[in-house]
Each structure stands twice: as C-alpha cells, then as structure tokens.
Image (cartoon, rainbow, N blue to C red; front, side, top):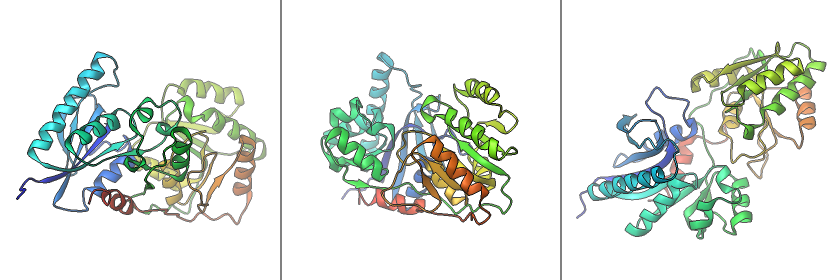
Length: 349
C-alpha cells in the first residue's frame, strides 16, 4: 500500500516572494490558494524558476514554495537551472506521490514538466495564458503535438493555438476571481489603466484616447497604475498631448490598492493588442466598472465588457458611457476562482 503523501506540483516562472507580496501574478496566487483548499489529503507545491530573486524554500498560506533564482538568464545558467529543477522534482517524486504536474504558460516550465512527466509516467498539463499561443514559440513547436496536454485560458487562445500549431487544446479553463469586490457609489476616476508599462500593452493609445476625450470632457480624470521601461516615454507623451494635468501615474501598488482604484473607476481601458484572458479586466468588472478593450477573450459577450476595433471606436464608446446618465456600474462576476481550481484539479483526479 502506498503511504506517501499526495502532492500536485506547479511549475511557474515566478511566484509571490511572501504572503505580503500581492503584486506578483495575482491571478496565479489566487488560483494556488483555491486549489490548495480542494482536498486536504493533497498538498500543493510550487516550483518557481526565476522569481523571487533568491534561492529559498518557504511556506505561503500553507503551500510549500521553492524558488530557484533563475533571474531569466540564458546560456549555461539556463542549463544549470533546469538541472536544479529536475533534481528537485526527482526528490519530490521519491518522497511523495505526485498526482500530476501543472505548468503556467507553455514555456520553459512546460518543457521541464512535460519531459519529467513522460519519464516518470505522470500527468502533465500546460496552461496556455497569453503570448505562449503566438507563432514561433519554440516550446510549443517542440512538444505540444498532443492537445490532451494543453489547457487554454480562453476561447481566443484555443483558436489561436490551433491556428498556429495545428493542435486544439483539450479543454478551456477560464480564470476566476476570489470574491465580489463591488465598487463604491462615488466613482471619481473616469478612465483607469492597469498593467506593466511595456510596449506590448500599448499605453500610448491610452494617452491618445484621454487627449481626444478631453476635448469633450475637459475635466476628465485618468489614472495609470503600473511601472515599467515605458514610464518616462509615456510621461513625456502625456505632456506633449497636453493631458499631464488630467492623468496621474501612480506607479506599482499592491493588489488590494489596485482593487480599490477599480472600485472608484467608471471605465477600465485596456489597449493591449494581444491578451489571453486579461485578469485585470475581470477584476474591474467585479468592481462594477465598465471595460473597453480590443481583445475578445470569449466567444460570448460579457456584460459591461465592450470590444472595439480601433482607438477611435474606443473613444466613442468611452464618451458614450461617460455622458449617459443611465450608465449603470453593476458588479459582474464571470467565474469564481474556486470553480477554476476545481476544473483544473478534475484533470488529475
């Protein structure tokens, strides 16, 4: 009789450095907490390859986390990192009964997890979450020939992955949120943007939309949450567009503070041109805000989530919502995280 304790091993490029770290991959944090509560006889262990930037084993809300401090380095460092993770997996396998492995994104983690699972006769799934479904993903092209090992985060990613790699993911599991965070009656932020200030997120479009709307609503207030390499360029662009007095850059803040911002917002603008299922949009909806984005994650419509085709359409939709006295700001909860966790766990049980 097998008396080993059971464990689900999750491989991720990064994870929270402590229980106080709410800003590192909040959706993944919420998921790990939810899935760890499903079955008391099954523990959850996270192997975090690159972040935190320290080698450590620590307890995170009852979940065992091991960080390898890979720091996203390539070459010999990457080879050494893989060996460390491989040895850690072997030790876990010797000491515990691994019910399966789950990799966040189809990248380095998925490559390690899939090879280890094949060698040891274990189940492994890679959870597609965004850019990993795009063309020229060397990891996807290398091992994703069987769709039964792939879980997509959205309908869009399912279709994108099949179009680019000729393989349809076995199932779609949408992200969830922990709780309903319905907003306050007083919404003093007309336009909110939340995300990393990197070229991919296209926050220059956010600034241009604010500038055009200002011509109709001179006192419009906009807030941009996040930091990144594009911050100074965006600040300079805001001055050039004449919206520096209308736009506040608040930098990186904790996840709870982000949610409080969303509770005060009327509209979340999400100008990214490519997303799997942006959790920030789902959180904004749960706070009662409207969302305007270019990306359609689902094949069905979601209440208060407006999909537009161009920045001009984004402007028109925003002005319409802001100008209409009948616009309502109702909390929209698409799916609780507990449901997401149960769907993933069902793959292993």
